[in-house]
View 1 (cartoon, rainbow, N blue to C red):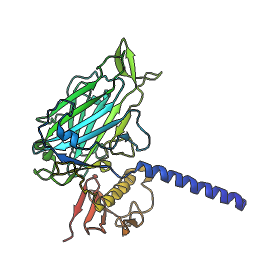
View 2: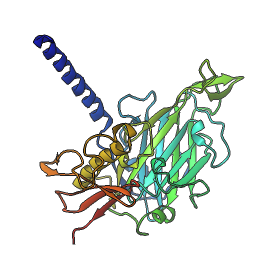
View 3: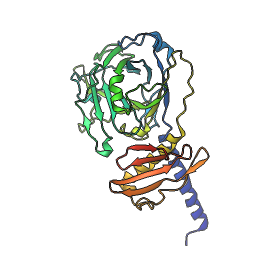
View 4: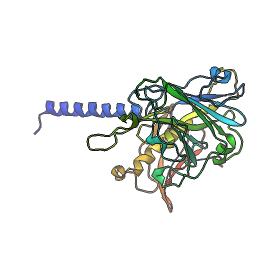
Length: 362
């Protein structure tokens, strides 16, 4: 029989391990970040420099972080946003001692170079979202996704942002390996006429929010006769890229839109503070997606309570002092995970295909 003191030590060690793993999980599942985009006061020239007064009056975002939300990036990245009645504007500044780029054809796989990326989900339901990428040569790749890759959606690679304007400013010299650069910046204007096509309304989201995120891909490099390329290991395989993002994903995958940040489009032009808070229902929504991801994970599908129609899916969850119980139900199309919000009394649901829905009680 095992000695009681030894058993207590093993039990304590297990508890400490679980607490440690819990801390890692909490670190990786940070609350999505938020940003208030102000309305412009002047006309913006898209030149990659952001010299206008409107840019000066708006705040920088928090610095980008590693995609999993744990490591500090090697180089600093930050962004700003503005809007007017015609366009949504983006400006990003990236530290980089070696600014390089090789890809010049539109809609090629831009993240094979160092790049800057934007992801936009107008409805916040993880479906029908846009992705935009550009490199230091101002080569762009724009695409539309009907669903995330996990849900086998269509990727519309031929989709283009009509009326797009973009520019790059380099604080240094492009593709010159014998000097050191400070970095590069990008400025982008995307027409609302394109963005609102993916939403349920053609109106601008004034004093409302959309789910948006940003990513910066950065590679270790090799030099061959002064020409930059992605670095390879001894076996000839490319080293993995760095992924630095504004709002951490908790996983190396930008295509889990439920983690993206919240951008609130204020009609404020002065730079004053807006009292924007993430709705409490969205905290419930994040938890439903946590359960949804677990359900799709084949290693976790046999966990008790995850296969029977109408059974409680996990235990009661408490947020902001109020409890709710998620329910899993099977249906002809697969399953739904739903609960009734303790804050708004809406039925909140993640469908089998990953789409989020909120229904008012009749």
